[in-house]
Image (cartoon, rainbow over all chains, first blue to last red; front, side, top):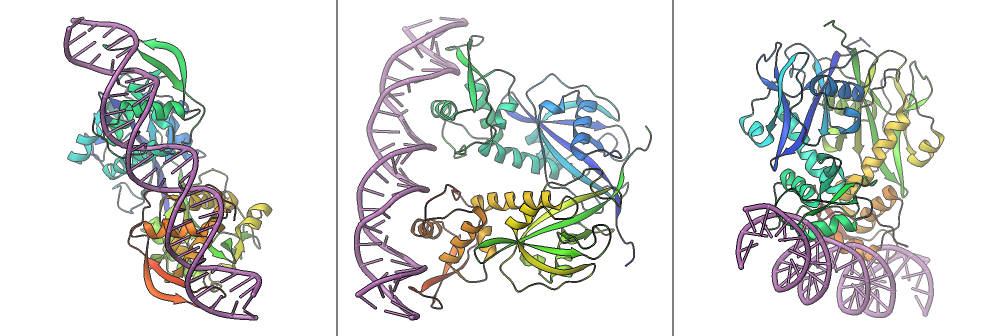
Length: 232
Length: 232
DNA sequence: CCAAAAGTGTTCGACGTACACCCATGC
DNA sequence: GCATGGGTGTACGTCGAACACTTTTGG
C-alpha cells in the first residue's frame, strides 16, 4: 500500500448575503494577489494549523469585513474539491453561508482591496468571480432560499428590531416573489417564538406606524413557510 | 504574511444505511490497522491525488463493500475538522451518506476486516466507533430522516420493485414511528412521479397480494412527507 | 371461519389563499 | 381628501388525520 494520499490545503470561502434596497446582495472583494489579481472573488482564506474550519470562517469574516462572525448565522455547505480548481495547487474549498443585516460598507483588509456589496443577480449573470466562486455563490443562494422555508434565519437579515414589512421584504428579495402582507403577518405572529413584539412602533416613513419586533428563541420553523407565489 | 497554512489530508467516511428486519442498520468494518485496531468504524479512506471527494467515496464503496456507488444515493455532509480528531496527524473527514437496499452481507477488503450490517440504535447507544465516527453517524442518520421528508430517497432503501408496505416500512424504521397504511398509500400514489405501478402483484406472504411499484422520475417531494407520529 | 395485510370512502379540522374592510400616518 | 403602508375579519378550498368498511390471500 503506497502512500498515495493527497496532501492539500483547505480554504474557507464565504458567501455573505444581505438585503439592500429590496434586492439580495453578496459581499465581494477585489483580489490583490495572484492568481486572478483584480478579479472579484468571495472573501476567504486558508485554514491555519490547529484551526477548526468554522473558526477560520469566523476569523476571515472579522479580518476582511469587520463583521462579528459569532453573532451571525454561519452554515457550512458541501465542499468544492475539483483537483484543478486552484492554479496554486490542490486546494479544497469549504464554503460557508453567512447571513447579515444591511450594514455599512465593510472595511477592506489583508490581501483584499475594496470589499463591497454587489447584487447577486448581476454577479451570477456576468459570471465574473474568480476560481469557481460563481458555483459556490449559486449554491449558497439556493441554500439561503431553502433555509428561509424551514428556519427563522430571515430575521438574521434584519437588525435588532424590525417591522413586519422589513421581514417580509427579506422573503420577497431572497425568493424573488411577492407575498401577501396580511397573511404573512398573521403566519409569523401566530408561529410561537419566531418573533416577539417590542411594544413600540416605527413612525419614520409614510403610512400607519408599524409595530416593532425582535427575534424569538425558535430556530426551526414548523410548519414551514411556503414559497408559492402570490400576486402583490 | 508567513505561510502558516495548514497542510493536511482528506478522508472520506461513509455512513451506508439500509433497513433490515424493520430496523435501520449501518455498515461498519473492524479496523485492521492502527490506530483503533480491532475497533468498529465507518468504512472510508484517504483521498488520492487528483481525485474528487465524491469519486473517492464511490471508490471506497466499491473496494470495501462491492456496492456500486454510482447507482446509490450519495450525499455529502458537513465536514469534521477538529485538529486532534485523528492521532496520525491533521486529517479532515468528508462524510458521505449512502442509502442502499437490503443487500447480502458485503465483502471485506483492503485494511478492513469483517464488514457487516449493525443496528444503528445499538451502535449509537454503545458509542463504540473509532475516531469521531459516532458523531458522523449521528449526523448522517439525522440527514436521512430529514431527506425522507423532502425527497423520494426512501425508495432507494428498496429494491427495483417494492410494495407500499415495504416503502412504508422504510419510513417507519428511519423515523421510528408508526404510519397509517391507508393514508400513506394514498399520499404516495397521489404524488405524481414518486412511484409508478408495475402492474403485477406480490403473493409471497399472508394477506391480500400487494401491488408492485418502481421508482418514479421525481426526486424532490412537494409537498413534503410529514413526520408527525400516528398510533398503529 | 378467522387472522392478516391491502385498499376505498368519508368525515372532520387545521391551515393556506384570497380579499373586503378598517386604521394611522404624511402630504 | 387621498395615497400609502399596517392590520383584522372571514369565506373558501385543499389536504392531513382518523376510522369504518370492503377485498383477497393463508391457515
